[in-house]
Amino acid sequence: MGLLQAASRTILGIDILFLVLLGFCFLYLEPGSGSYVVAQLTLVPVALTFAASAVLLYTGWDPLE
Image (tube, rainbow, N blue to C red):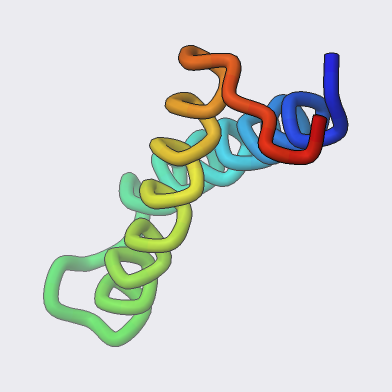
């Protein structure tokens, strides 16, 4: 397993943790509040890194090898 694969596994684990924490936050936030908007905007980079890590792990692509 290459360096990029190991980093992708770590990033995927961190993203899952962030998604679980955000899921619990959405239970207690009021829609329309500033905190709710920030939580929604936080989903964008988390979802993008989750998707990129999942694709890298699925394809097995490692350009540094």
